[in-house]
Length: 362
Image 1 (tube, one colour):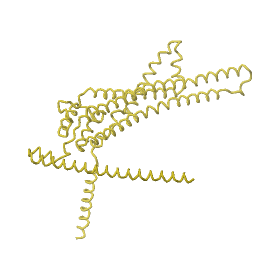
Image 2 (tube, helix red, strand yellow; image 1 turned 120 degrees about the vertical axis):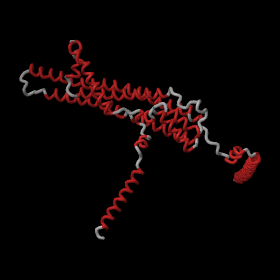
Image 3 (cartoon, rainbow, N blue to C red; image 1 turned 180 degrees about the vertical axis):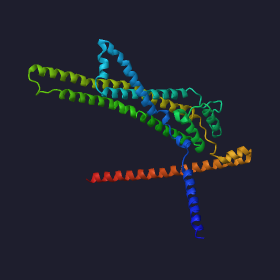
Image 4 (cartoon, one colour; image 1 turned 90 degrees about the vertical axis):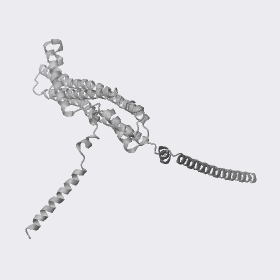
């Protein structure tokens, strides 16, 4: 008996653990459900892949600059990148990485624009978007084969249709679409964070290279070892030459920063324009065509569906009585407001007479 109790306790513990794990699994969202709210793929570039592409851009750039060494007039160009220490290599890599990010984002932007050309909510299915027609619209959009998480317009329309199917309310659907528009705008703005950091970091690294070059040039000047004027002049010439080379890194960094800044601004504006077009599309082809279910007067709808004329007349009489009650209430309110206005006018005239008598006595 004493040997069976520990065994039963272990079985009970295993059963409790199993039930707890089942409850935890029930509370977890699936990968599909979790990815439903992740729309970053519509605008964000893959960082690891863009870093590798940026490295390839740097390698291609240095190969492109290398042939300039063969010509005496252009030997200074490769010298900027090959003979100025480690800073130009880092600057070129950051610029190449930024260009790779912008390239990926530009390809996504083309996909966003291409979705505008489709008839996502065709009139052939239904001119008015009603609850009973939502499955056909959703099936039509999914047949296009465009992943909703990778397209702002597809995601916005599908979420609007889903929300309207659940809430069956035009105003709430419009509010949800407006909120989603703000989320998309924030997502687009945050996708440029890395590039903006690079635009800020490239000039800073150029200044660091300049400081390192200046310190190296100044440290090479040894006043104690110079015995005559010619030796001092030679060392000063080396120092000034080193200073001129030190400022080259700042020049490179400023050029790279400008080359990255202008395409970034243009691409960000283009993405913001696409978001505005998505808003216009939803307002024109979705919100304007939404029709709420006719549930405002269920008695009239049921009577009409049943084809009972007496029930319809009864409902019309009830509505007329309700309107008469509303008119009677409005008349009572208007009478009360008139009484209040008369009392106020009487009080105001009495106050003026009292002031006039006081002024006369004075």
